[in-house]
Structures are given as C-alpha cells and as structure tokens.
Image 1 (spheres, rainbow, N blue to C red):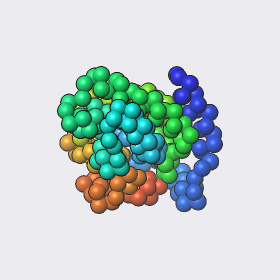
Image 2: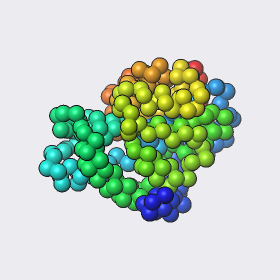
Image 3: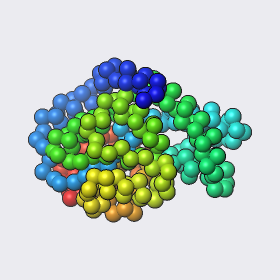
Image 4: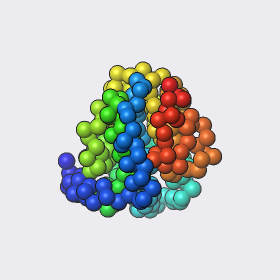
Length: 251
C-alpha cells in the first residue's frame, strides 16, 4: 500500500460520521429490515456510486491535461465520465491512445487524483448501508470500475469496505464501458450468471455496459440527471431511496 492509501485510511473514522439527517434516518430504517429474499450477485461501480469523487477526477484531469497542452472542460468531462483512461484519451487526442499516452498523461492524472481524493473520502448516502445489507443477505459483491486498480484499492481500503467484497475488478486494461467486459469479468469472479447480476451505476456508459452484458441496472443521479439515466431499470436520486421492493420487481 502506498502512502496515499494510508492517508485515505486515516480519514475513514471521520468520514463515517458525515451523513445528513436524511441519510441517518434511512440508515437506521434499512438496518432494521430483514435480509433480502433474492439470489443475485451485485456489481458496484465505484466513482459516483460508492464515493463522490467526480470533482477530484475533474480537477486532476484538468491539471494533467494542461501540462500536455490538451484542452479540457466540464462538457468533455461529463461526456467521458465512466470511461477508462485509454478511451478518454483516445477521444481527446482524436486518435487511438498509445500505451505511452496512458502511462504519461493518465498516470499523472491518477497520481493527482489519489492525492486529492483523500481529503473528501466519504461514502455516498445509502452506499455503505446497501453494501452491508447485501452482505447480510449473502449476496456476493464486486467492485467493477473503469478506474485503475490502485485507485480502487485506495478508496475501498480507505472506507474499510474490503471485507464486503469478493472481488475488486479494474477495467483499466480492458475494453472500456460501454463494452460490458468489466462487468462480465466481475460476474465471472463471483461465479454468478450475468442474468442474475445487479449493476449499480451512475453513468450512461455504465448503464449501456450493463444492458449489453444482459444485467439489471440501478442508476443513481450523482453525476447525471434522471432523464439521462432513463435506460436503467431503476433510477433513484440517491441509494438511500432504493427499497427492497424495487429490487424484487427486477428478479
């Protein structure tokens, strides 16, 4: 583990207490609910679903790209959020990104991201509660993110969520979302058929990847509007709004 991951862990105890009143009420209500009577695997996107890291990603992309003379703005960020670095750089460079592009530009961006995200490492409302609930119900769970493995390890360790996941899958070296490769690999690690998987996403490319993989999808409006996420099976403003009845209608 690098120093940045250690810094992430040191902030976890403070992060657990930072919930608004709405989240606290929902947490208390949901933890009293019985285990879910379903048999599914749960695949979690990470950025914008488990943790609100969008602004840290945007700032780190801006800083990295500016050093290489590449323009970047909020519109481009919104359009590419959820893609892996190779896919993002290929769009920005208007050509296939090389390994050197990914290592130099993307590598700098991720170094800056891991440094900055430690200051705001707080789980999104409802995320920890549903992760705990799924675990209590015996559902295997995996993180299935486009982020580099080092980012996933840093954030999940920093939030002390490792024990809830059977796999932490990075799609950084795979065909990026909307290709379903990341989700299919995560399902394989869990030993669960795609049709029995629930994907939790916040990005349009992630929803498309879930659908192309034959999976059900819940979308949370962290980074996109409800209208933009309408292709998901269920759309909620925050995960604390999700109910067991919502899930039972899907399986």
